[in-house]
Image (cartoon, rainbow over all chains, first blue to last red):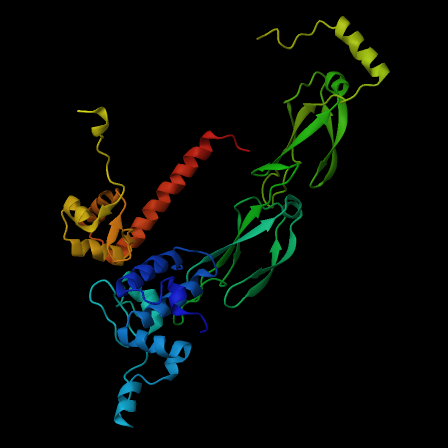
Amino acid sequence: MATDFYQVLGVARNATTEEIQQAYRRLARRYHPDVNHDPGAEDRFKEVSEAYQVLSDPAGRQRYDRFGENFRQVREDYDERAAAGAGGRRGRGGPGGRGRYQDYVGGLDSDLFEDMFGGFFGARGAAGPIPGADQEAELELSVDEAYRGGRRRITLTGDQSRTYNVTVPPGVVDGQRIRLASQGGRGRGDAPAGDLYLVVRIASHPRYRLSGRDIHVDLPVTPWEAALGATVPVTTPGGEIKVKVPKGSSSGRQLRVAGEGMPSRRGKPGDLYAQVMVQVPGRLSKRERELFEELATVSTFDPRSGS
Amino acid sequence: MTAASRFPLVAPERLGLDAVAARSGLHPELIRRFVALSLLDAYRDTEGRLWFRPDAPVRIARIQRLRAGLSLNYSAMGLVLDLLDRITTLELALRTRRDAPWT
């Protein structure tokens, strides 16, 4: 592995054993596959465990400091053999075979896997297959993509980047999960892998605001449309629809159009809520001004009379 | 006596290892081990001395309660402390969100 063990643990090269242990404990907790569902977390967890396994063992650390990432190719008894000129002694076990601290560093066996999945939670005795953990990744969709659904290609970056072609059902809502069976964390032994869940995040949209399957949208209308009533076009993710503005609609009035929200595979689709917003022209023509002035003198309407 | 010679006492912003040990009634070596297990945040100065936030004794009390009440070992303790912190943060966020408008 090309990554630097000290960097992996985020400690200085002259860090004390305690500092190394402290960093490992913190990172192992952060990246444990049951705590962190990010697809990259499991690889990170393995890196952290491997780095700790080497650096927590004084002999292993010394060899790593001297030989860098090639330290595994160097025999453990390199110095003794060099001093003796040659020799028939064989290195023990493998790298990191030592370094068993009683009590709190449980399960620092040379079997890295055991250390990760067994040792961390003290389940050293639990041999046999253990199913892999589920993972979660975010899938950001625009409102229109979520409305229509369809095929989508997503790539998860990590040590090995993975690409999936996912069929998004029409009408997914924020927070909904799409399950990719057996694409999560690897299982131990013959045990099955976990699942990968793609959690849908709907990107914010300049016009549409989503609340579950309901779509809220502003509906700008002219003062006369608001006063007299009108049928006005509204663009929705599903296309343009006509909304009837009842006469006497002031700003803020919600017009519900049943069934024009996000579609649903089972059950009812959401509704569209158009909120009336009365707009006035920024600049009036001569004629418009005359008419408004006439209205002002004729009308007895006072919206502030109630207050 | 001049007025300038009177100053109020201010609680120190950081605690040393011995102060934390004395307040929590534990041996300094055990506190040091808590730090190594990353159960307790501490800052190491250039001489390797440990310095703690003023709320360290509160956290130590929680560690002792969890150990005594639920027989948690120190290895599992770190995860439990992390999760409790995370729950607190999420609950706070949820409460703030409930009060705010939905947009």
